Length: 90
Image (tube, rainbow, N blue to C red; front, side):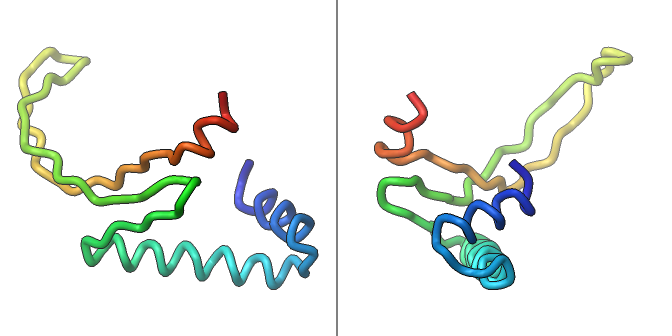
């Protein structure tokens, strides 16, 4: 499902216009991104939680040449599904 299909689905489920659904989705994405950038955790009970995690620097290998390369440390976003979402997907 892409963003346009998600907007259509939200509009149909909530019985709102596509424009309002797009505004709501964009607001959710912006707010979540800002919170994660600050280092906050975003938890939606039953659905799941988004959090920022630090990934340590490590040594990797270039698959083409086999030469070792250094991979820098960085922050990554992780999603942990909630129990209701996990049951639904099963």
